[in-house]
Image (cartoon, rainbow, N blue to C red):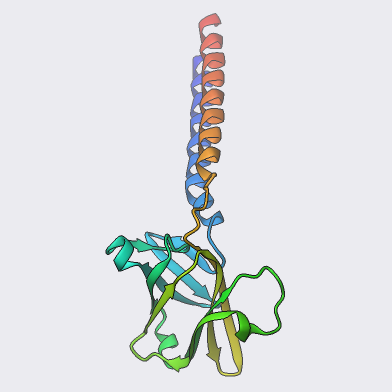
Length: 196
């Protein structure tokens, strides 16, 4: 009887470890913005089959601190896109930032706040400098022209707006449920082995 109990305990333990592993792997990716995601401590922008390392800085406000996705404050901002795929070095790339009006706007030029026209970046790096004077929501576009195809990555971001993250609440709730389940099943197994 104790052997069966030990096997059940091992089964619950394996389930818990698998469950925890999946949480750690899957949940951070579900909070990514558009084409941007955090991958092994790098902020990666995906444009079709191509990838770029995205780094953002506000040296006047935050020194050398790097950000991914949302820009913490208004002010001078530097964004650097480093090509992770050498193929991109021979393709024209355009970068555009527009106001997020939450409407379908046919006149893209009227809501464009920054534009870097198509250019081939043989060194594999695009450096953008923009002074964001006002807080707000924006959408960044990186477009790669591959032969006659336009491959577009869209990533929404905010400037100077603190986003309230509730993701930690999910972790706490899941940890409590998992802990309560382990406590309940552990006591149940222990009581069965004592009664046997």
